[in-house]
Length: 113
Length: 114
View (cartoon, chains in turn green, cyan):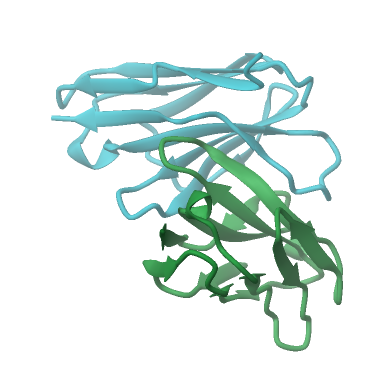
């Protein structure tokens, strides 16, 4: 079945550091790919998405590019802030015609001032 | 104006009890979901309803029963609670367009079974 693998956390960075969170997927068909973010004590919210190969999703300084050849969707940000501290989830949907969203296990990011 | 609201936010109960968590969305979405998030933050879908009809039912014990009285509500009832049911339960909704993949989540209901 469809699956998403994210790098293990937790990740701890200093403010203004560069962030990469790796995500790879396994899916039949042509899935859409997503990054969701969960701030402490809140539900998940969509951060960015890409619906086809070579698409780049971007939001709030975060970017991720849908790479079909490497089945990857790595999340990057050039300069993180304390307010970016959260758990980040990579997810896919639509692989094999399924409507459900399949999540990775989440990566906790802590940014220190 | 909370888009997806769940109640209660916290629930502490004894093993063997029966409890319900309610969810309502005011976004006009056709599809609603229940996800379970365990202590390691792993999220797994439990159920999905589209316009009051069950469309996804993952391998979930039949002690869990979803009920959708209308397309704006999806409640979760749990019978004979067990310690392993302790988790945060998230309700979510999405528009009918299956390719958007964007889910709108509630704030979660933290269930603790003692």
